[in-house]
Image (cartoon, rainbow, N blue to C red; front, side, top):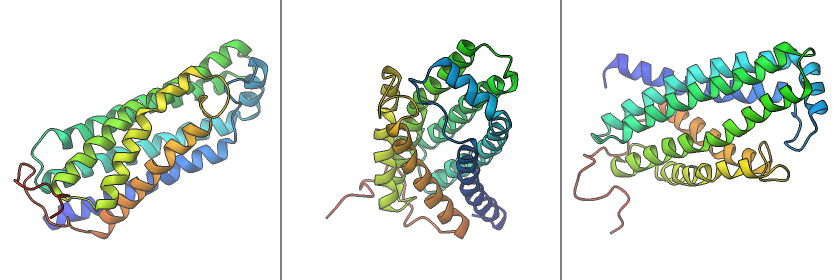
Length: 236
């Protein structure tokens, strides 16, 4: 890598960490939204009482998505430079853009509902929040694609530490199950329930860990062509 590329990679690593921090702060300052089983009136009351927080949430989330898109682009480059000439690095970037674009729409739905309160009809407010919840559940699919592609690519090239490869694979499997939360209206498997939160934790941990490696300028553990005769994780 050239000195300029190294600086860009380090900046992208910092961007990935900051993106996660901003999204976490956005959610924390918003507070605890009503559960999926909450009546329409309770949803409208929450939006009315948290109008400013919902708009700040959308703003911070949007900035976070921009930073994470930069991180995804740099991760694609890292995987390419490690020797992976397959479509896997491209899938990482494609999934990152897919998540950012879809996320921005869903966050915009929540912000739009809050913007129109308290004049918004309660059932309309509930439907808009439900749209956001179901949409976030469906985001499990591109998240699964992103982490599966990154894990497979890093497994073949040693672009990331072994524990990050396995954490990425586990994150992909967990998020592939996330859309099942669309089918429940209460409990841990409902949208915004415990399972939704659990599926986010490995995403945040993985992104921060990879971001730290990139920010420190850590090099691949031993780059080799992805079509080499020996898998990177093979044991002797």
